[in-house]
Image 1 (cartoon, one colour):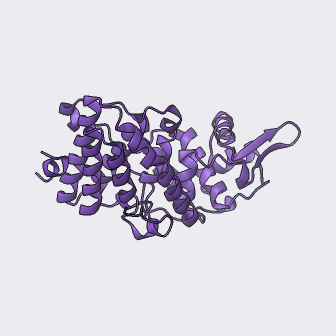
Image 2 (cartoon, helix red, strand yellow):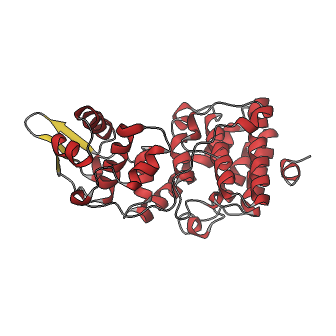
Image 3 (tube, helix red, strand yellow):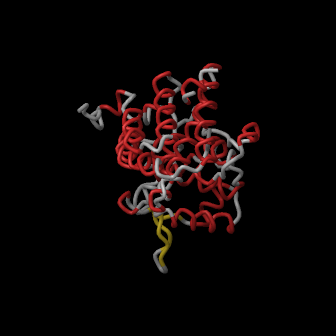
Length: 295
């Protein structure tokens, strides 16, 4: 019986989740999905002392506490342009504005520095860095850009990047016929099919993210594996289409099933073709990359 026939009866950062046994699907550790009702980031002078509802909602779902909330709030303000390039960030001022300790401010700025958003130098202090210095492959920055003024560019760039990564990963994954992986991929397609029948877009999206992340991880290429977080971030950002498979449709479900079937059969060419077709389901992606030619 094909995977598609079987299915007719999610994932904030799922790249680091392990494989579950088929009987453990009900305990699959789905994280809270990113909020979809985001509002504009306040200007620095208007930032409230409780880190802002936007920052608290997104960071709180990840269990980061005050440190993570401040990273979220400052990161969004930098990426949105509310804190422009070369803007000095005075730790004492930040602590007073957001009513957090000096330790929380210091650790938060270190995280932002690691992401390339700020730089700290002796006798100069901490300043916001230009976009050219940002780590644009960082999942947090991907998310922040997807909800900021650069949202259109971010979604287009993600679509282009996925087009280069995932078809190759699908071809390579066909050569790694681990039964537990094949079962897990089939399970994800099954969950997507059930979620679509129930009108559960959130569960569909989480299983979708797990499917794509797992496929990249089993491609047998460690450099590609490091990019799985990018694909997961692309699938998790909402508010507009990133690729054809971010919405519950019969077409996307069928393509996922074809990919799983091709992998189970060890047919790398068919898996690659099905992935390319999946990534061109949505008209927005078709404007980015043309559909593959039929020979």
